[in-house]
Length: 193
Image (cartoon, rainbow, N blue to C red):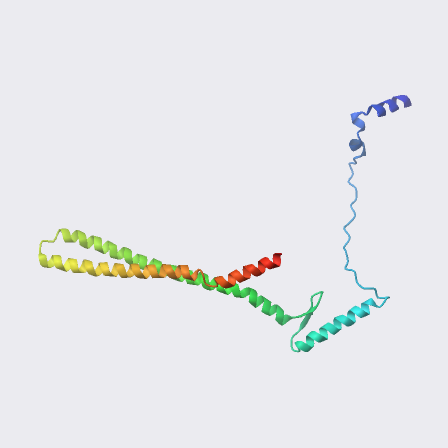
């Protein structure tokens, strides 16, 4: 019998593959991940006292420069809340410019639409007057209609001029804050490097 078992083992039966035999149906217990703690200075060697003293010295230096502002330890150095407030204001400034730019573009586009509607009204009046000009029999009435056509034509041209002016302002307002945006992009590019 032992000889037969040795023979089967030597032949390498598919039923005795290491992956098949060693795989267990019961999952192994996984050990929980250990939290990696920050290495703190030794308390017995006096390193902690030196760290605390240098940290307190830094706090006093910053407090001397900013006596009326609260301080916060950020892990590396003492910083004032005032600095964080200034940083937030600097970050929000481009947002103000973006909203100003968006507001200007929206307002100018409304004006373009307004004068576009006036042009459409004037053109429809011109069409109706030109059709009534064909049916006129009296010269006096014909002159009256022609003068009205010229007046409406002038109004249409004036509306077109204003419309073109506001289209130019729309494209100009798109450039509001462009120089600061360029500087901000350059600054962000430097931070990535």
